[in-house]
Image (cartoon, rainbow, N blue to C red):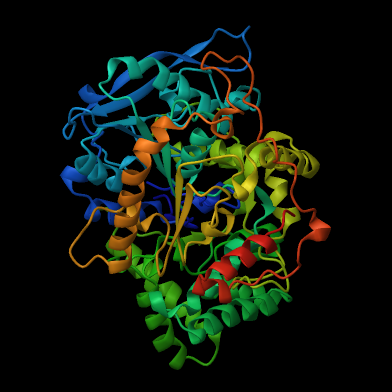
Length: 594
């Protein structure tokens, strides 16, 4: 029979898209950053969800369509439209209550029989109960796969409408259409990870439509060389708040450094291939495979982005991971041998989660070429198709190349705990050329345009937004931690991971998450009356009418940012984890655009 192959698991960004970053993310050096251990995260969310606090998309009869959505909002000559799916829920609606919109992102949330975490918005549902709000969930263009009827396929030419700006214009047009039909005059937009970014940008670009924004784990600074991601991974491995320790980081980093030494000789490469049961003939002779397997996420999975104390798998529970790795390191001679024991242990964990009757994979696939080839497919498929994962990665990777970057590199001499020197910015940028014929210069230009348009993490000229970020979530590196306007609030949650406060309240939920939920609720309560009356020029000067035919204008002061030469070169995070005001301010100053 056919040999079963274990695919290299990927982080699910940003990314995770409740969360996607990815930014996850994801966040997202490539689309891979949004994909790692998707099934594990899905199981975790299934355990966390409560029926009352879930926007249930499992009943197709409840899903409606708005079929006059423009394909191109900025070309009046293009009259093509597409059907955007949405859901309304008035279970908690009270007279005079607001509308809460859960923004969708980079996943397949509209499949029958599924309650995917990207559209859960548990915290929004709980808040809707408190505020008597009517709830809505809205689809993101393109990510419906075969159900997206705007283009016939996903060739590069047909992806030109697949941008955050078009998606934001979708949201604004949708609200302009449905708002007269709803008994709500005020609306708050919610999102986590990339949808969190959309939530913030929706308030910034269309304040006359969206009165306030709750942006969780939302990356706003587009950046090619996202070195900060793995800086946070390294810091999180030492964070006592989640069960990390200096010894955990030391063993993990040393094991990957030992692997790098073994890559220098053919004998060493053959030994590693045997030790970790890699598929194929001499796969580590190809440096692309080394970068993909050992330099991007590490040879064993530790994902601070999705850390959760109730997860029973070492890849999403750092206390379990570091505790087990400590025991393994004491019973082995070398750090790489300890990583081999963890590798085997995680394979056993994964095998226990295999569907009944499905055999466990016989080897681990480290082929980068196969990964890239999967994303070269341009035909549209449904979310249940075996190729759906490749399709999703193609769609998200296009956005990283065309708008955001967020390539999580592991350069030599950095703080990255993986095998350094293979996953470089040059290697990461090559995916854009392979898939979309975009040169590194094209990608850097696209990223610069994004920051000029939205204004980066400074979030200039915007109001009535709350940004919530977690200590061990690497995506906080690209988010807003100090707002320019007094009505832009930032909440930094000690020990929290990506969008963790968006979970439904469960017995034993850490107190800091409960406090974060309360802080968001109090902020909305204080903002809604004021935001509804805010018609100052500062809040509206960059806004076009709803019937606009041009791309919304970028923030006026977006270009007034320090140049690379003016920015400090230091890029450390250890002190920032204390999260004092001065340290957050310093952290903002050292973020550079590479």
